[in-house]
Image (tube, rainbow, N blue to C red; front, side, top):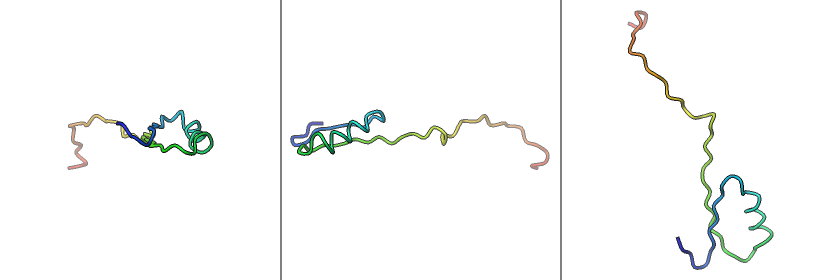
Length: 60
C-alpha cells in the first residue's frame, strides 16, 4: 500500500514502546497509519479432543 501523506507502522507486540515514543515525542508532524493485530490468548484456545463412539448404558 502506498500512501502519499502518511507512513505505515505495524505493531508487532515487541515495539509498542518505541512506536508510542515515535508518535508522542519524536515525530509530531507526520501522519501515520498504525496496524494493530489482535493478540491471541493462548489460555483460551480450545484444544481438539477425540470423540468416542462408545455409548454408555446410563446415557440410554
